[in-house]
Length: 340
Image (tube, rainbow, N blue to C red; front, side, top):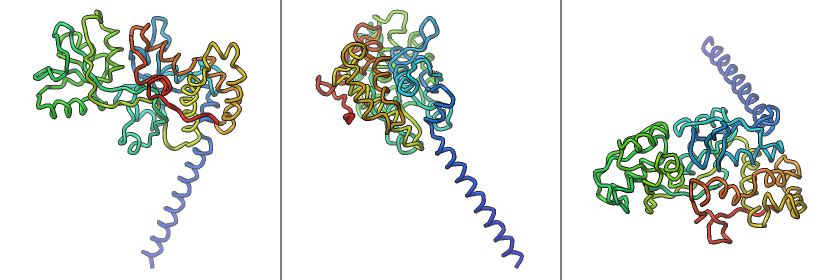
């Protein structure tokens, strides 16, 4: 009888604990990320620790870059103020844990969308903002034209990424032997390469463009043409808040759709404000945003093409062409569902 009584009490305690946990979870879900962000008054956005063209501080200490502009776009959609963002620099190793632990609301940090990340870490990739691929950078004096010429080389790589596994598989298939020198921090990998501790540096090609721009003599280094992997990069949120997932996703889609229909920061200020307002009115209420959200976003940071050209384009130190990141109507593969 005593054992039955003890068992009953333990069962009751377990039930009560389960109810408390469920109530706590329901309270968190009821509050939601959007409500938390509004109450706080700022969006907390995870970015890189410093990657040219994507997220880095300028000489005045202001964050700039392609990924930074996406953080601003979300803040503009919510607050109509691009300045209401707190930027949190995160390493490749720490970025996803910081997001799942709630230290940031959004991760906009050149992160590759993979199955293991999407399905195995309570994460939700909202879409692809930049289609990339892994490549290699080598000193121009080597005269190399392909990574297949790197047999016996030492290759610098940033840990906590998909990069080393991709490169190892590539060289194994080719029957070549290389050694990897991994670094937790990107700036350390870049310095080791610049100091000649590595014969080559492998990363996403867009990242290599940023790293080359930060080297003392960029023209003395070449990014080889070979692409050894698919690297679809995009913003990431937690998967426990569908409302927040939709909001961030449609901000990205809005940037893409805006370019397709001819909405830009210039046209918003001139003759197309009404068109942007109509699109915003269609989508604002379901997203928990005002009817003016799209006007605020495009007026503040421009469309996806403007963001690309300003941070990564051929007239910047990155010197990147749109390539496959052009709209599907312009020879690229960038595409978003319609706002309707």
